[in-house]
Length: 88
Image (cartoon, rainbow, N blue to C red; front, side, top):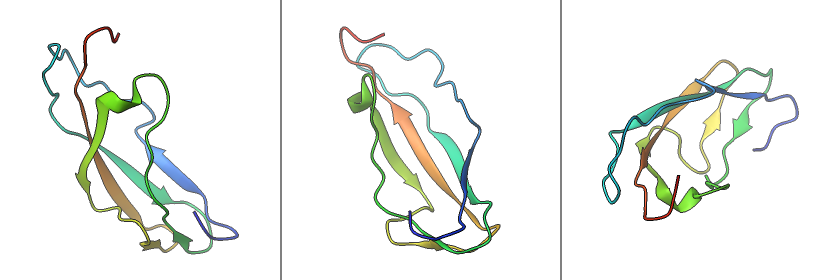
């Protein structure tokens, strides 16, 4: 993110992908990113990290690398979950 007074808020703060069978893929879950600051924000690349991060995928949405969010503007990120053996 670039911008001196930009504040990126992501909602909802938590999501549920429901019950997903091993080797299956969840339905899409969409989160909204909003610039709650007073200056433009330039979005960088999206990286998923943490435990079992490889089981999650960005599959769509309107947020794109290099996009600029003006104050009060928002965009979406759509995710899916595909559990692999041994994950909880």
